[in-house]
Length: 292
Image (cartoon, rainbow, N blue to C red; front, side, top):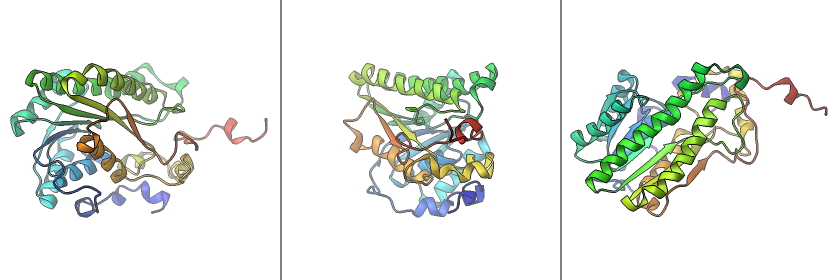
């Protein structure tokens, strides 16, 4: 697929594709378990919902747009026979976060897995960020993730049951130029994950992160084509990742394969933390000039 094609929402994986792609896990890997996935109306969340259902889990999905959630739920039911329920909500509101966790229990009788995939950001030079823009991104990516984590953990502790949390973040080791708000929020989630992985270990609650690099999702369509064409230079593998790459990584942490893993970050970025550059708001002339 060409770089231009990644910007075309029509080129996203089809429902039939997500329902039939080869998987590295046995089909009943998550049989009997219930997962709650935020930000499931598109991209990674949509792919993950298909995968979890194919692995035998029952899935509650949530996000801001009810129509998108309904479409994903119906597609998963039709193509996989899986059980999927949905609820439109915002993770920024702690009451709504608590309610969607309760809804998973009311609908399926239990909750084993929480995947915090919801989030949002935009590319802009840090010096130009408004306080409103900064607060909106931090409120969603950091505070919203926390509301969901705490709501799930409180239920698990109260019920005396184990649980697994996976927070979808981004690679932040080298900073994220032109996305300072997102970098700060995601780094906060990584630190939070390490902290509660220790605090919640006595309750049998594991907490981990998955940090994707550049992934082909619907969201790329909001960026100019010339920026997308350069994304292959963001990592030494010189390509853009696929939503399935991330979904299978998340499943690894949720399943028994992750039973002895907590407080860590699984990086799925093609080596981006080691080499490459990504300028989604345009490469500054300073970095284009090769002279000292």
